[in-house]
Length: 258
Ligand SMILES: CCN[C@H]1CN(CCOC)S(=O)(=O)c2sc(S(N)(=O)=O)cc21
Ligand SMILES: [Zn+2]
Image 1: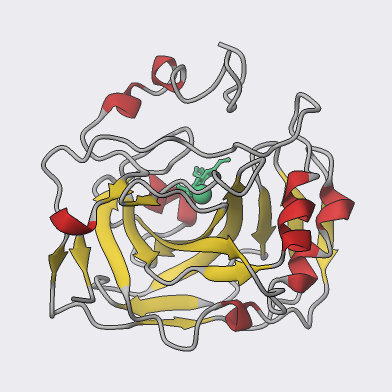
Image 2 (image 1 turned 45 degrees about the vertical axis):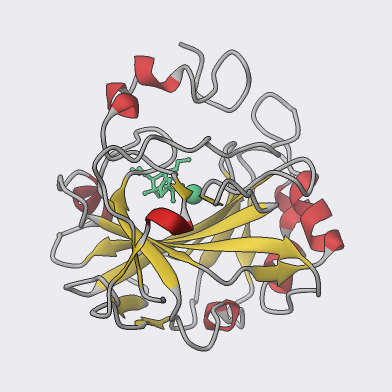
């Protein structure tokens, strides 16, 4: 099979050939249907402590644009549905070619123009790769934020300003050390959906505790256009790098809000 992607000949409908788990019962993303979620008063806010990075890269890996600090950067996530501390690994984006599509998760069938994923791994594992392969839904914790078009996002501006430098697949740049990742997050990480799921790209491992925030972040139209200028390995616009929703099967989606 051609390397996986999001085109007709290598997109989500083909992924099961190399990754049979694509047809598993704990796949992501899903459509978050408000009439079917269940409030859980035991779900407390999350705490993310992101420390400044000395040598982080911003890269185009052919499937997304990704912020990646060197291993062991000391940033961590606790609380919410998580029983232990998770280490920050990377963040990346999914987006569409117009404002009516782009997010991976949906809310009552509605797609947002983009979705931002903060990937963390369970610190009881010796490494990130062990966490991905650890089996069960507690290997990774991914925070999902919907992006909608509105005011310029000043916290994301240092990142969106770097996009023209990683327009082509396989390129990367060093991120200025004064980049403040914490500033991207809302002050309180409260209202969210959470469920057990998978990576939304190959290898599609069912190792993810998903935490998707109800409140979208805003980015400007110019920031959205920056994403839409990114090119994939086939030299085509990367926009459309989102997997459609997967069946929920017998999973429950819990909310921290009523
Ligand atoms: C393009 C490749 N994307 C994946 C790379 N990794 C997994 C395997 O690595 C050894 S990962 O854990 O960094 C994640 S998280 C993630 S999503 N969209 O579900 O948040 C996809 C991937
Ligand atoms: Zn993602």
